[in-house]
Image 1 (cartoon, rainbow, N blue to C red):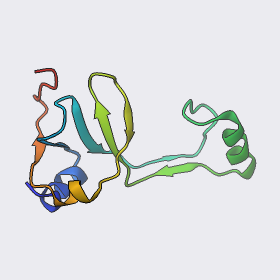
Image 2: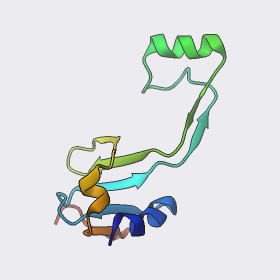
Image 3: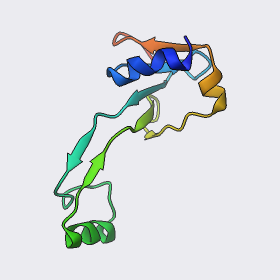
Image 4: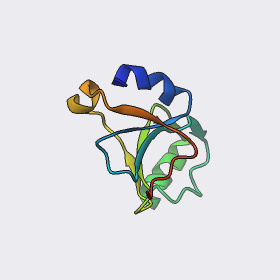
Length: 101
């Protein structure tokens, strides 16, 4: 599949991957979320939490693509490059996919 063919699947909540990736890697689109109270968030430094709370603002997450590694458990922001956008080896990952095979 091409990049343009997998985008609707990402938007519908499916995970995808490229055939050339290590089997343990998948990409998914994070579910949009609005966090009004950041005081209990562990992923934000205290100084930033204090600044956000001081101004009475929260965080809105949207349009974030995550690449997840089943081996390390690490999830990080995914930025698609020209190679990804022009690739034809994209595939939709089924829920029964075994990343450890």
